Length: 297
Image (tube, rainbow, N blue to C red; front, side, top):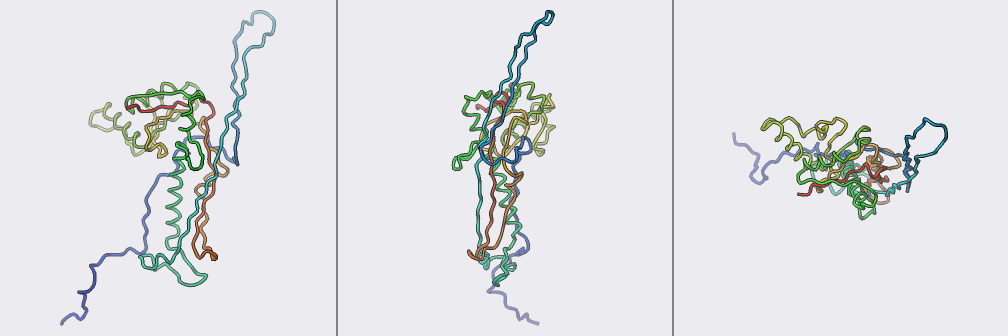
């Protein structure tokens, strides 16, 4: 029996997965895992610092001779207020695979894949925040750690090496012992981190890899007080920064406010709107515990 369905005018079949929208996976603001967070910061905030010195004097004779000093100083953390505003028209999706989730009725509007859209944007915000922490943002007037260290009149320590491995060693050698004892971190870009792991594997055991770059962090070989980590915020730079964890401060009002969003349908605008609002700023406490390194090659 002849088939009565005529298919010659149809385009080649392509399976449409109407129920799934894939989003690009991204690492969040990874740097925040390794530094101190100061909450309740609304605007310019001082870091009040006390540095004490004592003098061991000869006590074999009576008398009182005051020596030593207790020096009070301040560093200022200046956060900027950041907003992300986006809007979407759901009817733009009428002629797409997502149209089956639309509801064309007043008062019953829906945003197809609402959670996916929100999650994708929150992930990008976290990535951009990590970059701001290190590289600042000229448009907002925000200074990152690199901007602060680049001023170099603040007493930061500098280091340099011809290779990533040599630079890490140079930075490590200049981190003060008291900073190491409190737990230190050496930061670099994720690209340089992979290069560093490769250099260690090559120098250690020939073709047998002993370190897995997937972990994204590792202890400094020979000193477990130091963690070496690759962060997205330093991507595109050759900077390598070493410091005590509690020496680096991220100031914000509400913890993780950069990941909190509001998504709603605006009847007045006839659009779906997305909003994030937070403030952010960084500062270091002791310049002498901030080692600002760079790969020179």
